[in-house]
Image 1 (cartoon, rainbow, N blue to C red):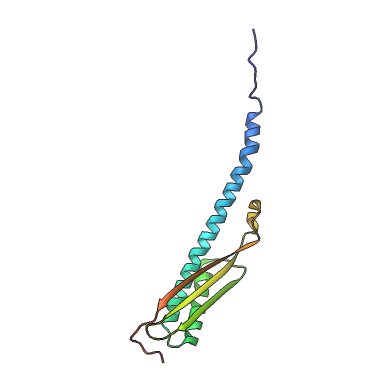
Image 2 (cartoon, rainbow, N blue to C red):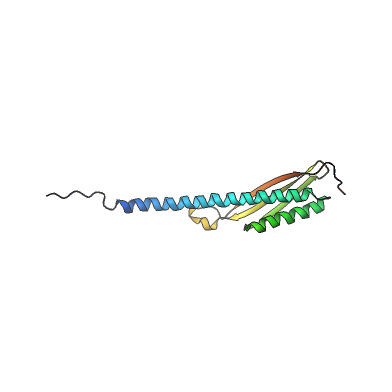
Amino acid sequence: MSRPVQRDRGSVTTEMVLVVPIAIALLCLVAFVGRTTTTRQILDGAARDASRAASQQRDPTSARLAALDSATSTITQSGLRCASTSIELDTDRFAPGGQVTAHVACEVSLRDLGLLALPGSRRVTAAASSVLDTYRATR
């Protein structure tokens, strides 16, 4: 009797050595996309809330304070952790019928996704505009 030749011996180990690192890198990539997408959605909401709060104020100074409070509150309540955050309000067209635009930016840490060889952080930005009511008093 002849014995069958076993040429496939150890092929599972070889496949695992090749597949596991690729699978881990793919999971890290999914985590990266998820983190940046979630951050972008939160910042979109913060910019929208900031511009809306600013458009309801009577003067640019009050509008800046309201926008800052609103955006900070939205980011804090979401649980988003930014290395640095910037909130700016453009009030150049602050007049009845004009608009205000809020710009929100966040530096998101990517250090825990080290397997992808990404830089330490990524800046994510969002902007939103809100129109001031045409028939309102500004003072």
